[in-house]
Image (cartoon, rainbow, N blue to C red; front, side):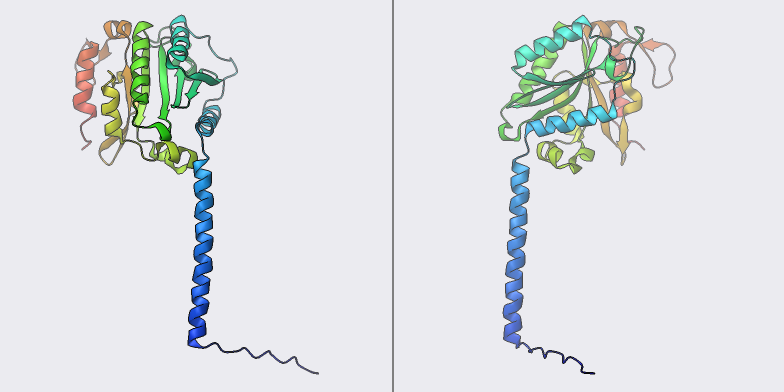
Length: 268
């Protein structure tokens, strides 16, 4: 039985091996460069509409509309949203349940009606029917440092005072969201939680005593807190029990001062 002869391999010289490795490196670098160019092109093509679709998809999966449907907007919340769309020159591009998404070339703002988001069907809750949650405010990466965010925040607080509603928000650096490519483009280089807190405070937001269970700490520092731009009617009527165990109930200013001293201190 004849056996096939193995083809004798030509042994390359050191110089030939050097040239071969050089060629392989060149091809590998070319492939890496093409891959980076494709990734950059895909990244550059991500738009605010893509961001909106991603956020609204998260809303639909995390907050499905309950079987009882949604509550009608109160006059004050409905009036606020209508006037905001008019004054902001933003288009109402998407709605779901109690969520309303506004967008233009400058950025995106997602607002929600607290009564529908939290299913507050009891008129006994002090914020029922008179509170909007600022879910997201994201400026276009091509138009940053031009004051759009500041103008929108001033408009939101101005209209909230006019319609006597409160505005709540969660303040955090959104590190968990940055794993997504769409989110990375728009919030990847955002401010820290402390910087955001100070920025919101410049518009009159304060620590929110209604949401004490939603504050989150990590490594002895607060990394997610709740802020509120409270309406005058709530500020002048609601009183809170002491978080330090004292007897009696305390007004808004006293409670906020206590929150500032206790919650913003590093956890021991």
